[in-house]
Length: 187
Image 1 (cartoon, rainbow, N blue to C red):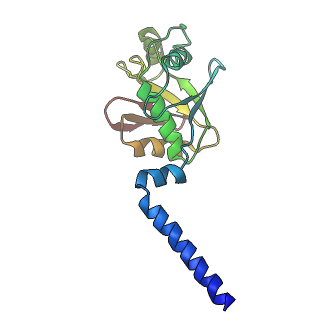
Image 2 (image 1 turned 90 degrees about the horizontal axis):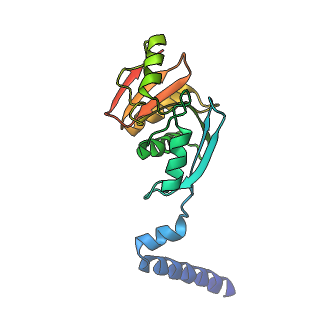
């Protein structure tokens, strides 16, 4: 008889748990079940050796102070000039690494903002530099993620289906920008 009572008690307890969960709103159940993970962007500029790491809000992005630091971090290091970068570019980098199943991974920055003078100089030495580059507008970045095949980085960027994605396997970087949706293959 005690065997039956124990079994019955387990079923009653389970029913109480299910009934209690059913009375909660879906949002409160999700709040209990999932704890938001901090959104952290970690960058290293391979030309200057500088690093940047900061947590940011999904809804608000980076604070103004952090954006100022990012603008300087992404500066044209040839002439030490900075400009306001499109904050959507940083969210895009975060989403690319998330699409790769990575969190808090260092992204290696090759080129961010470029002055017109630097862009013109680069154009003289390479066919792959556009005269009206989004780098000049503060809307582009060339980067890679160490240890991740470049083709996978490109595929993750393309899956976002926003802005431009340039693939430069010989030069070992991916270009992303916040301009119109388009893709191309460089050298």
